[in-house]
Image (tube, rainbow, N blue to C red):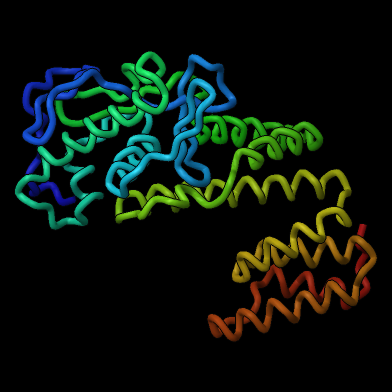
Length: 297
C-alpha cells in the first residue's frame, strides 16, 4: 500500500498481548496460537507452510478452515516474529478494496483463528503464540517450530558447507532442507498480492537449494544419479537454462554424448517456441565443447 493510505491501529493495544481486543462481532478472548509440528514434542506448537498450511500440536495436525482465516494465519507465518500491521492484513484480505468494517472484521477473524486453534490443539498448547500488538499481530513460535525457519537454517548450513568444499556434508544438509517440502508454498491458500510476493520469494529459495544440491552432487561425481532428477526438474521448469546446462553436462560426463546433444536441441526448441530466443552463451559453449570432443572429466 502507498504511504498515503489510512494506517489502521488496534484500539486498546499498547504492546504485546495474548488477549484479543473487543470486536463488534466477537468478545475478547485469550490469545490461542499456532499449532505444534509433528517434529516437535507433544506440548509444543508449530506451523507448516512448505506445502498445504498446517497447524500441529499435541499429536494433532489441523488445517484451518475458512479462506480468510487461512490467509491471516499464512501471512502471520511467513512473517513469523515480525509485527504484521493491520493495514497489511486488510490489503491481503480485500486486495485494496476493503469494506468500512475491515478493522473490526480482521479482529473477528483473529479471534476465531485463536478459538479454532485452541479447540483443535488445546488451550495450553496454543496460548500466547498469536500476540496482539499496537498496530497488528505477531506469530511467536518457539525455535524449530516453523518449517520455513528450519528450511532456511539448513539452506544456510548447506551453502556454507559447499563453499568450504565439503560436498558430502553439503549434500546431506541440502537433502534434509528439501525433505521439509510437501508441495508448493501454501498450496491450499488463495493468495492475494501480499502473500503471493512472499510465496514467490520462498519458492526462489527452494530453487536455489535445488541448484546447490546439484552442484554438491556433481562435485562428488554423481553425474549418472543426477540425470533422472535433472530431467524431472527441467520438465517442471522448462525455461530454466541453468538446469538444462546441468542436464547436458551430466549426460556428457556419463558418457552419453548423443543424449547430451539431443538435450541441447530440446532446450533450443523450447526457448525458440516459448520466448523467441536462442540458448545462452554458456549453453552454446557447452554444445561446442561436446561437438569438439572435449573431455567429459
